[in-house]
Length: 148
Image (cartoon, rainbow, N blue to C red):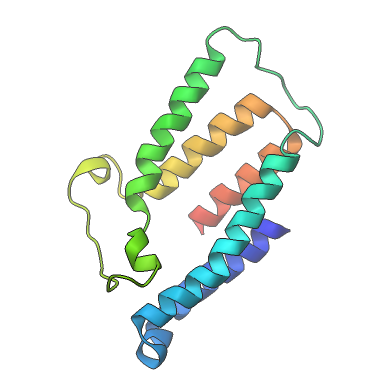
């Protein structure tokens, strides 16, 4: 599956960072990492957007009063967890020198792994709203990748 290819490439390249950076340099490694990871991530996101309503309809909660608002708020909050845990975009673009960031304030005061928490919240909200086997399978794979 596309998510498996992304997970192997993304995690595989991340695991090679300590060996590759001394050889090619930190900035070059970030560029290589982004050149491989970003198109794969965009492909997965595009596929999800285009096919998330396909598959078997497992449930339909769209008519439950307040469900849309609850899931919209959950999705919004998920980005508060996801955003601070991503790399500085200027580092990804190799404009600034990559650095190790240890967050001691903000969202990491709530959880040690904000990206995983945000991803679980995002997946739960989307899976509950869509109710399809495709959305559920994609969510299970994304959460599994973070658990790995």
